[in-house]
Length: 218
Image 1 (cartoon, helix red, strand yellow):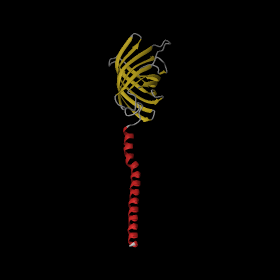
Image 2: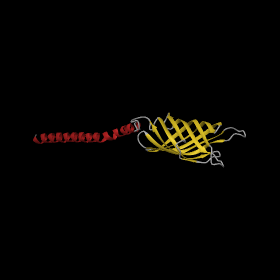
Image 3: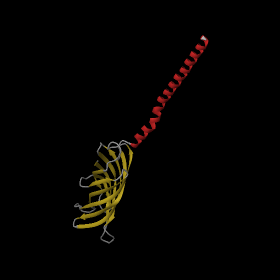
Image 4: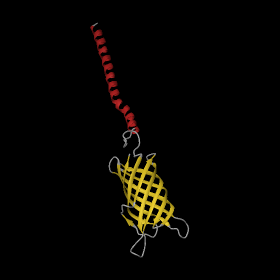
């Protein structure tokens, strides 16, 4: 009788131990699986919400940008001396980017060159360009970008009492460096080329210039 009771007690103790051990193993597995199951969701949230200059989801580059450039060196496309850095030869411009890759640029440029002449009193030409360009840009690394543009500009050439008009083909290539959250410094090449007409009294207009500039974007 005693041996039978002892056997029953041992069986009950063994069954209870098995149940306790199974419950412990299941709890450990549940704790171990929880971070693994939540990791993909966390990664998806990080991808869906990249850090941008505006904080959170949105654009990585400024939507509006405006600046001023100076010609470090300019080579005229007509009979005049090349020009070095001069404050009177400059470019005002503004850009609107409807995406981080594509935008539109408007510019107003003015250049002055001393004409070839045998006398000491060399005449000085003045050319004004008012144009619109289609533009694309690419972010190289954090704080560096490159851009290129192509468009047309209304050209007005003045030399003394002479005044000639033309439509210039404008092309541009630039590289920019971010100085702060809102300011950029740029260097590039700007080419404007046209002719005042096809007659004997007409001439080629435009120049190729190397630029340094400063811009503000928001």
